[in-house]
Image 1 (spheres, chains in turn green, cyan):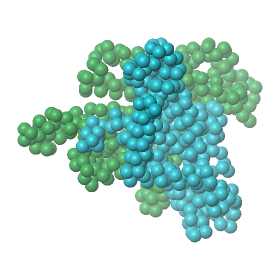
Image 2 (image 1 turned 90 degrees about the horizontal axis):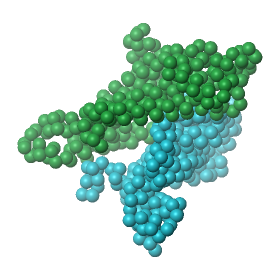
Image 3 (image 1 turned 90 degrees about the vertical axis):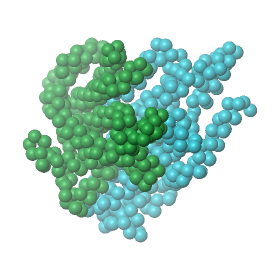
Image 4 (image 1 turned 30 degrees about the vertical axis):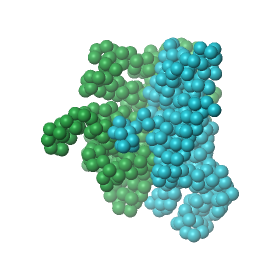
Length: 314
Length: 296
C-alpha cells in the first residue's frame, strides 16, 4: 500500500509539473505582446513596463518558467493585469462559490442516482429500469446550459418560485443561498445524476451476476439482505471514484452554468478574465482547477486502494 | 482476399445490420441523415435569409410563416437553426478529425515502440487529461483568439488524449499477435506493420470512440459559442443563438428552446449510434452482465 501511495504521489507530481508548463506556455501563445493586448486603450508606458517586469516577461523564456514555478510553489501566481491585485487572492475569493455549487450539485445528483440506479439494476427490464436508461441517455446528451435556460423559463418566468440568477453566500443568509443555488445546482446535478445512474446500474448488475450472490440467494437469504449485505457493499466501491471525479470536474467545468446564472465562482472568473484579456488571472484559475482536479484524483485512487486491496496488487 | 479483410468486412456488415435492427440506433441514424442534408443544403433549404433583419416582425411567436418564431432583430429562427447545423457538423468532424489523426499517431508510436517514447508521450497525455475539457478549450481559444478555426483546434487538442489512450491500449495487445511477429520476421518495415496490420485491427474501438467524441465535440462547440468564443456574429451557431436568446427567455421562449433542442437531438443521435456501434464492434466495453444478457 505504501509503495502504491508513493508511486501515485510521484506520478501526480510529474503531471503537476507538466500542468504548470502548459499553463505557463498559454501566455506565450498570445499573438503579440500579452501586456499590450491586455492594456488595450488603457495603455501607458509606465504601467506597461511595470506589468511586464512584474510578470517577468523581460527575462528569457527558461528563466521565466523557473521563476513562475518558484513563485507558484510559494503561492504567488502574479498580479492581475486589470486590477493589479494578487491573482492568488482573487482566485481564492471565488473558490467558496464554486465549491458550494459543486457540492450541492453532487449531493443532488446522488439523491437521484443512488435509488434510481439501484432499483433499475435490481428490477432489470422493468418500467423503472427503462425510465432510468432513458434518463441516463437524456442526461448525457442534453446541453446543461439549455436545461438551465429552460429552468429559468419555468421556475422563474412562469412559476416565479426561484430567482433567475445571482448569488448569496451561505454564511450570509442560508435561506436565500438555498433559493439561489437551487436552479444552477439542479441543472448541473441532473446531468451528473444521469452519469452516476448509468454507472451505479452497470456496477450493480455486474455484482448481481457474481457467484457469491447466487450462493447467498441459494442459502435462502431474503433479497433485501442479499442486496444490502453482499451486492451494495461491493458495487458501490467503484462508484466512489466516479462521484469524486464528477465533483472534481465540476470544480472547473461549470463555466457555462456560472456565466448563465451570474454565479461568482472560478468559472465566472475565468470567463471574465478571458473577456478582459487578464492572462495572469486566467492562468491562475486554470492552474488552481487543474491542481484541485489532480489532488481529488490522487485522494480517490488512495481511498479506492484502501477500499479494494486488489487495486494495489494490479 | 485475406482473412483480415474478411474479418473487417464482417465487422462492417455486423455494424450496419445492428444499426438496422436496433430501433433507437436506426432513429439516431435517421436524425443524423437529416442533419447532414440540412447541414449541406441549409442555405438553399432555409425559408428565409439568415441575416434578413426586419424590425416589424421582431420576437414573433412560432407561426405558419415562421415555425420557430423570429428573434430580437426579426430574423427567422428556423432558417438560422438550419444553417447553424453546418457549423456544428463542421466543428464536430474537423475537431474530432484532428484528435483522431494526432491521437492515433501518438498512440500507435507509443504502443508499438514502448520504452521511453511511450513514457514521454503518455505522460504528456496525462498532463492534458489533468484539465477539465471545457476549461482547457476556453483557455486555448482565449489566447489564440475567438473564432470557428480556433474553436475547432481547441476541441481537437482536448480530445486528443482519449484517442491516444484507446489506440495505445489496442496496439499493446495487437503487437503481440502472431501475424505481427510474422510480418516482422519477413522484414516488413515498422511503418508498414503499423499501417497494414496493427491499425486495421484496432479500428473497432476507434470507430466507437469517434462516434461518441462527435457528440461531445458538438456539445463543447455549443458551450464555446455560448461563451462567445466560437462562431462570431452575425453567423449563426446553436450555442451563440442560445446565448443571444437568454436575455429574452421569459418573453420569447422559442429563442432558447429551438437551438437547444437542435443540439440535444444531434448529440442524442450520435450517442445512440455510438452506443449501438460499441455493442457490436467493441463488446469488451460492455459490463459482464450486459455481455451475458446480450449473448443469452
